[in-house]
Image (cartoon, rainbow over all chains, first blue to last red; front, top):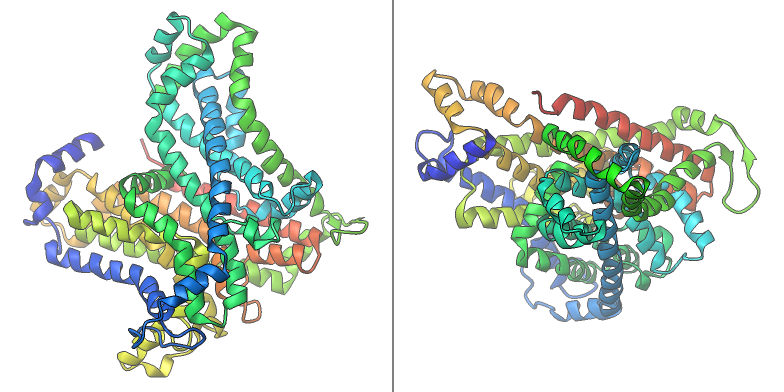
Length: 292
Length: 307
């Protein structure tokens, strides 16, 4: 029924461009959306204008500076060691995302398709973790990671994050695999494929869109993770960029132009990636919310 | 869902007996790595949290058994109660504002978010979802500062009298933090609801208009029921974001002035790592985890699809 609705509205372009239906008409609707867009962008615009004011001054909220100080971006980049932060964040994300996506996909496949006896309850156990606030376990996690000897290393962020992502990964991938018709794997079984071959050669290629969305979401969550880095890693340069931003604020909190320049640099990578892959990101974020 | 369950029950007897116990073993081998990570870094810490919550422990020396007295303190100490109350007040801002505005926008634009304009709008409205919350906190601290753009705006429209440093104000700090959360979640809720409303069969609206239904009637009897699931998603996501907030508060106010903007997540962090009251921090953590589940379950139950 929803499918028909979508097809119907797609087949009738008249609906999209006004007519008697929409209560406010195109112009009114666009005005609202544009107002929302301005509200959304305002924080970035005012940070940008402040970032161009002379370092150490206290500029007004929104004013194009007479003498824009582009140097502030260079100074912020150097004083926060952004190059090392970028590297550190990239290493952390590059360790977390592939491992977490792989074992999450395997578990989702196991629960949905192989379904060994009792796995139903294990799945419920995973689902229970979906709403878990990270603050709820940060204290024991600190002592656990310390006992393992990982405190103040990147592993202190990497390993717990993989565990914390499992509920969503399993939930997400199971939801995908449950909807794949069984004929697929049956055909493979007849060809004598092992469970692993079936998984890797038949199921994973079909699951590519779901896996891509999962990877995008987990990349964002890892890159922007704040609580784990500030608790588990004392050296800001071993943290994620978001975690380091906390330290950067402590250091430069009173120098608004430099703080704003640094913040803009720190949020630039994900925003750039987002704009390049906006279609995939929007799809992932929308579905991610619906399923999460 | 029902189809899938049927598929599986058809399949299960066909595969498992064939492999026998080996088949089951293979299944568990697929699940095991994920389960181990989940167990070690989530389930075990949850259990330890519960255990710590029964102790008095400074994190270094010997601990003493305190039974449930930490929980009694969490639920009776006026400061901790205020902290829990703050989280629920944030729900009003994090949830009500984005969902209300999202619903308004969705009903107003219905099918208009297409073409190039739609793409640009979607991209822009999603930006708060991809930046670190910490960056949102810094940006808004600057917007809400005494000479920030918010006060500039109030001066411009002749409301210079109400300007202040919003995040340092005893009465306005918590609402100001709420506004930051609303900004972060507004785009997501709007896009979810706009996507949802486009899926409602347009002929329902046509029929209602032929019957002379008012805009409110359409909203009440077509839009709201049609968006039930999407509203459920928005409310669930935003309520969790409010109850479990940390990043924004840590950066924007540090919990102050006083404890006016302190939320449970921040208080746990502070109790455990600054005040060395691991037991009390853990009791608050357990209360927070239970609260989130207690709040989310009825939302899910109320908004799930009725068949």
